[in-house]
Length: 97
Image 1 (tube, helix red, strand yellow):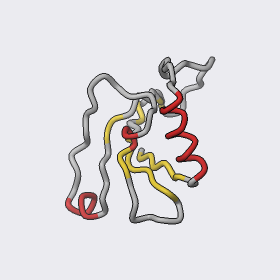
Image 2 (cartoon, rainbow, N blue to C red):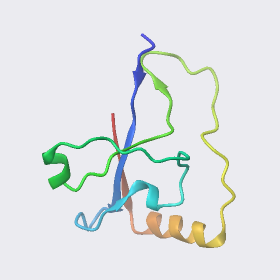
Image 3 (cartoon, rainbow, N blue to C red):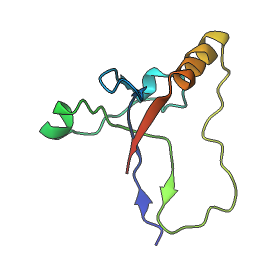
Image 4 (cartoon, one colour):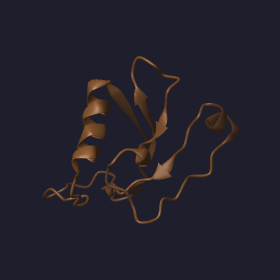
């Protein structure tokens, strides 16, 4: 109990066009100060993966007593347009544990 669960963010893209993918951090989302990528296997590289460490802090079988704010972002209209577009285009977000 209490073991850290490493959460990686990977690629995002429109659900109906799986060949159009972007790195998760290309969207205006909470991101670490320095983005650290995971070493990838040949299969992951060939699959187009781009796994990077996330800010999510998850512990196995540990209760979370209250909500924790991941980050504070002041969104500009342009940033909101990018997120709206991703929602309207039914983007999928791939996370890896």
